[in-house]
Image (cartoon, rainbow, N blue to C red; front, top):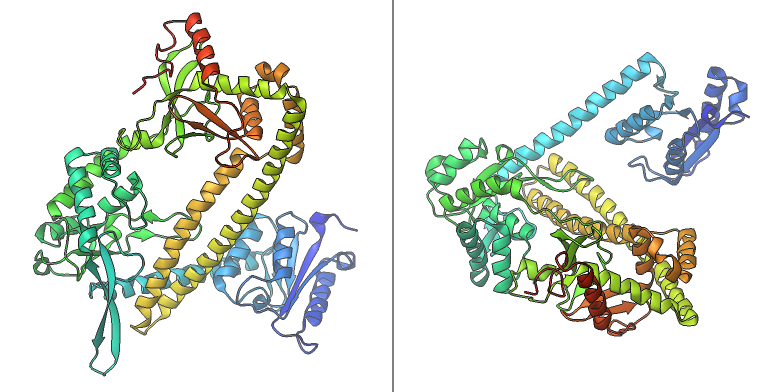
Length: 585
């Protein structure tokens, strides 16, 4: 028996079940003959055979093929042998990707009929030729898509997807010379909503700050199309969108200087309509959508009115570019125990905020601050900050007290165990469903892009573009949800062995807590505590297994006060005279 690295994989496929001609059985025998002649009889007996009968070569979604590639990634064989190239795939891009992967893993690929062997110089040359044609195919499709976009841009139509804030999409029917009715779309202002982007541009022009605009919109309780509060990212997306810009002489000058592809002559920029920009984003498979540089945009004049003067829109872009390096940076603290667990009574998360001061024993003093309070500049929430050092110490003292009642504590740990297992299983199921949906959507988008490149029907093109944009919007939301779930899962990811060890450690929590590392303390707290709710005076701790409104710990105001007095007695100058460390505003 040969070692795994010396084994050879044989792959066979046929679209229909049959025992005739090049059936899977015949393919396997021919491949074994090749192995016998090229490698020797001893290799034939240890060949690994993978058969897909009744599967098309249209794509790579075939069970035996997927199993073979999984084994290849574990370096279980040194070569893959097939009867013909099309047994693997009829898609050049799929085939090129396969060859690239096998080359990286130092696995040879052999096709008997075409005499294709990547272990030989001629085989490698063939591989590069195929790669060249594959690249040519991709570039040709991309060029066709851009040409189609260029033609569509001349009509100034809206190509579909979610309409920008302030507008709705409206279908317009038109009868052509041959008597056929064609349907296109244009943007129509929504009077009560169109004031929002104008307000955002005016606020930014006045304040030169995304954070200040966000705070003012929160204060005024202005909502997005989806009924949510505006974030800095949503505000920036509106400020960067040229759809709001009036198409006048200044707009024409700006985009020509930026070397954008402007489809209309200068005289057409008369100030009566707004700008329509195509090819603004790159939606490459497997990556987040990114804004392309303006020299790759295709600029047209839309059928909708512009809402923002071009001079103001241009000034805002210059300001955003200046402020790019001053972007929001999340404060990091390695000291905070309750990060991710503590909520303000207004319902929003609280996060640790470092000060410049230290306690007597050299710890940095930090506070927990409500995110809504910060974002709205105290307009939507004005809850007191919580002294993080004191609150964290009080939580640990309560855990010590909880462990004194062994029976009650064991029951609570069992609730935590069940919650841990259920939460992990739910997260995994949700993540798998979302990843599958994302993958299927990406494949559909790629298929639509290919169809768009080959489409000649002017009616089909806008529909294809509309569907591509809709799926891209859906995928953006899915990626956000996946990221959120992965962060939650990573924050609570423990193996069953680690969890059992943690439970044993918690049973002696009183005696060993002072010697624990910060990460061990965090893990201990998260095993028992579901959330901490801060109301400005008291901290309410909700344990796993409790109903949402049920508080199982006593309020810990007195313990916090006791801890605060002790800290103040140790170092009057190091700790703020306010019980909450920072200020009590």
